[in-house]
Image (cartoon, rainbow, N blue to C red; front, side, top):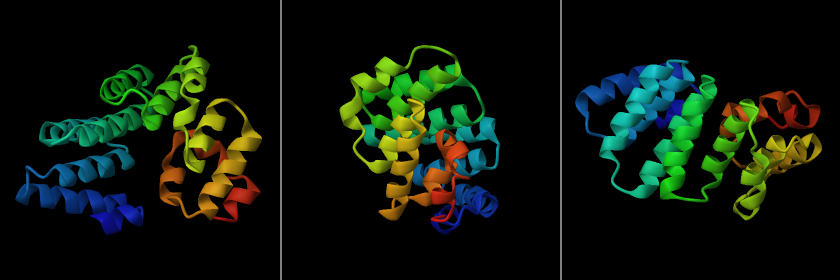
Length: 182
């Protein structure tokens, strides 16, 4: 499944995952990857349901936080801002300053027209990679810095597929300096 995920072949990933889960229904990692494939195939309800099944099998807080990030991402992708905030808050209850959860919550608040700047500014020190900084600048509507950090992130070999999947970056992907690197 990793091969299909890394190559962004979510249809094959979904098919493979479905068959693998029949053999290993209690596999946390299979359920998580299968749920991600469903989300990337716009099967939000089923994907979120499988993230929660994986949650039941999570062995530690890192896995739980990872799932809350994925669930929040899924709700963002389908435009359910309130559930994205709720999922982010549940994850933040476990890891109070996790940058991905803070950014997801900030993005959902922004989409609702609610105050989000304090959330980002108060936690500024957690945005410590070029990709996270690009998210922060995108949320703060600083287009020039967001583009600069996306370019730096790609040049440093950070996960291009991840960057392409993020809603916050969709409007930036057609910028010439980014397009030529992808």
